[in-house]
Amino acid sequence: MLSDAVDVIEPPQNSVMIGTGKGGVGKSTIAAHKAAWHAARGERTLLICVTSQDDDDLGIERFGRGIRPEGPSVLNGQGLYRSIHDRTPLLPVREVRPNLDVIPGGEAVGELLTLLTARMPVEGAQVVSALSRALAPIAPWYDQVVIDSAPEQDSLEQLALTAARWLFVPTRSDDTSIRGMRRIARNYKLVRQQMNPYLQVAGACLYGSNPSATQLHEEVRQEVFKELGPNTPMTGLVVGYREMPAVNARKKGLTFGEYAAMLPTSAKSYDVAAGRAARADVVPDSIRPLAHEMDLLNVEIDALCRKAPAS
Ligand SMILES: Nc1ncnc2c1ncn2[C@@H]1O[C@H](COP(=O)(O)OP(=O)(O)OP(=O)(O)O)[C@@H](O)[C@H]1O
Ligand SMILES: [Mg+2]
Image (tube, rainbow, N blue to C red; front, side, top):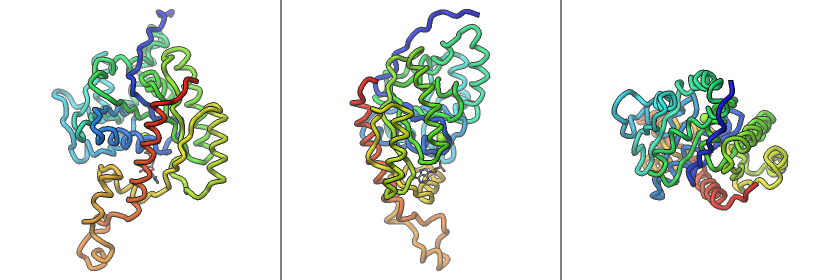
């Protein structure tokens, strides 16, 4: 049952995993927006969704965005699964937006758990480098790589952490979100010690909270320091909790900024009252501050990924 010593694969220079061990804290939203933000600035960007629930924030499946590679479908996590199973380079859906390619997540990503477990006896710890290996041949095409991750799955978290240079941790203010940070902190340490010495914590943010709850924010800050280390940078910006615009944007497969751009031509409540428009056609005004906050968050995360100190 012994395996060879692990080969360390250096992750791409600008690769960040958005992760924490708790579900529903905003990982996929932040990952999709970070990827789209870089792409809109002219950087060639790859978004890899190591998550078994494909939220399709960018409208790849629902609205047919992007150019699919030839051959069998890569949607619903099938492309990611196949690359890791067959040990072949990742095949992205290209140009989902200008400069933005995506490896979609979905159900098939859940099947990776069985595959990795079956490989464990022979490959040992090396199994979690499967994503790094599939990424390495295509990484030179990209200026930025953003990895979205699944919660509550140590193997998938470790797979993603092994392929990234930075870890960025969003959290909410409840106790289970704090416990989720504990899980990612443990996986971070294991991966850094055994597989990826290049990995560093870029920072953390409080996501989806009332910006005026400053006392609560301070308490979360202390928890972040406790779980991720006292030098963990935290973003000053807290993206507010704005469910309606966030959920509507996702349904339409648009980023917050793209959705906000529809505001001037949107139907209004009085059009709905007069029977001229459906409720779904009304773009909520609150999309504007949400889009603005997400942009500011991206500026902060980007700065952290450029200057995070070695820990
Ligand atoms: N600022 C916000 N305010 C309120 N709701 C939001 C906000 N941003 C995103 N959401 C919504 O919160 C829900 C969870 O977000 P998201 O899917 O990004 O979290 P996640 O951490 O990726 O979840 P999972 O662990 O299930 O993959 C989604 O319905 C999303 O549309
Ligand atoms: Mg998600």
